Structures are given as C-alpha cells and as structure tokens.
Length: 308
Image 1 (cartoon, rainbow, N blue to C red):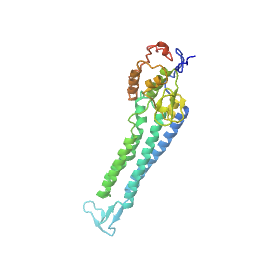
Image 2: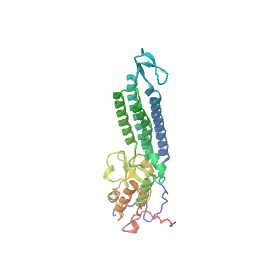
Image 3: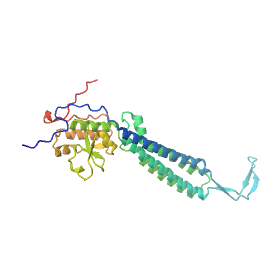
Image 4: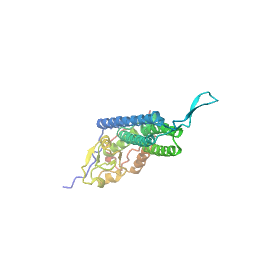
C-alpha cells in the first residue's frame, strides 16, 4: 500500500470561523497589565526623584566668608553682608550625579517593561493618538524626568562652572540614552498580528502554529529545520505564540510548507511583501488571498465580505 501523502491541517474545501481580529490570550493580557503597573511605579519614582533634585538638592548651598561686615546698599536702603559667597556643596554635587543615574535606570527599566507589555497587548495603529502615546510613552517619560532638572542645573547660580558642565553633560547623555531606549522604532500593532493570523488561517485552515524557545518567530509546521534544535516544540494559536515571545510569522513560510509536504500558494512572494509592508506600518496594504494551482489545495474557503 502506498504511503499516504501529507495533507493540510484542514481537509480541502473545509470551512472555519477565523477571528475578526487578533486578540491576546487572557494570560498575555494579565502579564501585560502587570508589566505596565511596574513600569508606571518605576516612572513615578523617577519623576519623584527629579522633584527631590529640583526642590531640595539644587537649593543646597554653603556660605563662605560668613564673618563679613554689614553694609547698606545706597540704591535700595537694604542691609547686606559683604564678603559672603554662596557655593554649591560637594556632597550635593555628588548626590546630584548619583540621582541622575538613578533616574536614568528607573526610566530605562520602565521603558523595557512597557515595550514588553506592548508586544503582548498592542494598540491598534488605526487609533493614531493612542497608538503613538502607548508606544512612545517611555521616551515621553524620559523627557519629563530629565529636561526640567537639566535646565535648572544650568540656571543654578551657586554651582561653579566645572560643576555645571559636569552635571549638565552627564544629565544630557543619560537623558538622550533614556529617550532613545524609550522609543519603539517598530512598534507592534493589532493590525500586524491580525495580518499574520489571517495568513496562517488561509495557509493552514486554522489558527495553529509551532515554535520553540529562542528566536522571535513562529512556524507553519513542525518539520522545518529551524526548529530541529532539540528543544520542545510547542503548538498553539498565534496569540499563544505571541504570549510565548514569538511576535511574528516567519516570512519563509513558503519553503516551510514545501518541506512539510503542504500546498504552497503561487503568490507566496506577494503575500510576503504585503506582510512586510504591514509590519513596516502601512495601513492601506491589501493582504492577498492565497492563489492555489489546484483549487482543491485550498485548506479553507473564506468568502469575500460584501462591499460597503
């Protein structure tokens, strides 16, 4: 008896009810919420530390020549102590440098946790304002936590030139680092994840992918070379793959389908280009439906939605 050929996960001509939009798993959403709360606490502490620097530390001063003599200012009629000079104490200067480092560490750690939360539970790119704020909040917080303090360092009248220069440069460098690390240059979105999910369903007939520990992508079947690492192969939905840290479908899905003996759409390269454009932020790219050499190869039949 001839060996049975490998078939797609859903028999040809089958139907399924694909989700309208990608949604995170409850576990991923819960984890994202936890990360966001921790990030918020760290950012709050960073801004509180900035307030300590502004309203207490920068106001520290010591007076040199306190045995000066009292004289009367002829222009104002007020008495003033001549020969007394206010300076910024060295202990306060060192504390200020430490404070700047602490603010940077809190800001950057919060940004990393916030980005992780966004990868688990992203915003919609179509919601432009929320999408921008949610994905760039780390950079915004870094600006808030540093800029006022840096400005007041340069305006401080009690610091000598060397103290101002050193503290100012340290503050600017740490602020720039925190802002850059807070920016998400390629933020995740519901649209990205939905495009990958839709592709998987149309290629396989259901929302089921494979991944292993390590790497950032998930695969269409379990026989591809990339996951023959000896690690446990895990199977689940695209949402479960994202919850496991795999944020996208591999763009090598055509060769993977071929390796696993599954039908490969004739327009796989067009699908890849569309996915790449959507991942790069395009909001008007059409995700092509797979074109099969033999219509019987289609693992799922999906009707076109009626035109509005």
